[in-house]
Structures are given as structure tokens and as C-alpha cells.
Amino acid sequence: MSTIDTTRPMISVVVPLYDEVGSVQELHGRLLTVLHGLKRSFEIIFVDDGSGDGTFAAAKDLTPLILIRLKRNYGQSVALSTGIHAVRGEVIVTLDGDLENPPEEIPRLVEKIDQGYGIVSGWRQARWRDRPFSRRFPSLLANAFVSWVTGVNLHDHGCQLKAYRRECLSDLTFSGDMHRMAAAYAARSGARIIEIPVRFEKRKYGRSKYGIFRVFKVLLDVLVFHFFQRFATRPMHFFGVIGFAMLFFGGLIFLLMLAFRFFLHMPFISTPLPTLSAFFIIVAFQFILMGLLAEMIYRFAVGREQSGAEVAEIVRNS
Image (cartoon, rainbow, N blue to C red; front, side, top):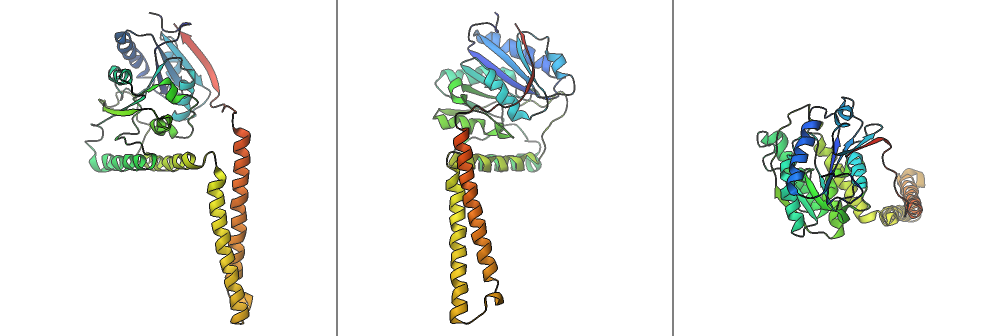
């Protein structure tokens, strides 16, 4: 069965790769076995995110495969977004390229999609059980915080083994490290979401690119997500509220300064009130102007497609 042709495949598998020369061929072979077993048309998309260890060379002769090589290392979010924009399938499956996400779990995700769910997210229950304090506890806290802020209750937001209906990811572009919020972003379309336990396998090749400090990055990403959820289309509501609050306090301090001067006969320079009043008023106008500028940028940017990463090469092996 040829999987890269003029017909639209049923399933698209997207895998971002960075320095995975040891696992890429085994991953491709296991994916082929699993996907052929589903007896549906499919395509496999590998996105080489500027690897320096020969990952692209190890993958370029694999068939069937769509291999996208980015000109430099943009990060996993951009690599994943690039792959998603290239898919043609009705069901999109994403997973990491280090084999910690077993491809053999894909049929269980697709089964839930067939049952009517729009998003199926994996839950690596066995992960970090051998490191309860250094990794498992921070991970539990981070996932609880993400669920609370986004309103999408998952045990494992960071698991990249997920399946989506195509429409859930339409017009979605990730940047920074926002791929961890993929399910939360996709859930905005109103799709039904379910989380299922999946196996977790320890890395066989290479070394992990993640450390404990990723937890702090996740927390920052959540704040960015929350900001864009509420204010992406109305930035003036954010900057303007802060600006008018600062203006209010600046005005109160100014009135207090006048009261001290005319009722208590205290010179202006004998208190820090003039400086505080000027500070609050100046900062207030800066926030208001930032809000206006953000509104102008948003209105000019609406409808324009974000360019994303610069692709160096695309190899299509059928």
C-alpha cells in the first residue's frame, strides 16, 4: 500500500526529531508495523529540527516517509507545528521521536477517535515512579496548575502521544514551548477530550533533552496561554485596566499632595508625594499607549498567516 500519493490518507503521524539518530530507523519500522495493522491509508511525517548528529541522513532513505528538515533548531513546538501544517490526514497522531512513547499505543488512540472524541491524550502513569520527589511530585504540581488555569483536566499535559481530529488543529501555530498546551488549545474548538493510560518506555538511545527546570518553563507557558486566551483579541482590556488603575492611584496621590499643601501648609518638596504621583501618572499613560499599540498590531495582523520555521529541504519517499 502506497501511503504518499495523490489521495488523502486517513491517518497522519507527526514526529519532531532532534538528535535522534539512534532511534529514528527503529521508530519508523515500528510505526509501519502498527499503521499497516490498522488497515487504513496513512502518512508518516518526520520533522528534523536542525539535528547535528546525522538524524536527517539516517532517515532520508526510509520509505514511505515525508521528511522535513528545518534550517536550524527552532524547538519542539515549531517543529511540531511545521509537521501539523503539512498533514493531509483526517486523524493526526503526534509522538516524540525518542521511543519513550511506544508507537504500539496508537491503535488505542485511534479507537477513541472512532468513538467520537476529538482529542485523545496519553497519560504516562508509570513515569517518574522511581523518582518521587525530584521528578514525580513537581510534575504532579505542574499538571495540576496547568489543568486549573486552562480548564482542561488532564493528568499528563506533557505527554506528546496524542491523537486529534484534523479540524481541532486547523489554523493552530505553536511557538516557544507551547506544544505542551496543544490539547488545551485544541479544546477551544469545543471538541470532546479524553485521557487514556499509555505505556512509558525508558529512552534506549541518546540522552534526554529535558531537565527539572522544564517545570518552571511550563509554568511560564501556562501564564502566556492564559494571557492569550483572555486578551489575544483585546489587548487594550489588559493594558488599559492596569493603566487606568495606575492613573487612579496617581490622581489620589496628587489630591493628597494638594491637601497637605493647602490644609497642613506643607511644601510640595517636603514629601515624596509629587514624585509618586508623577511616577504613577507617567506609567499609566505608558500602559494605555501600549494597549493602543497592541490593538493596532493585532488589527493589522488579523488574517495574515504566520510564516513559522524556514524549511531547508523536504524529502518524499513513497
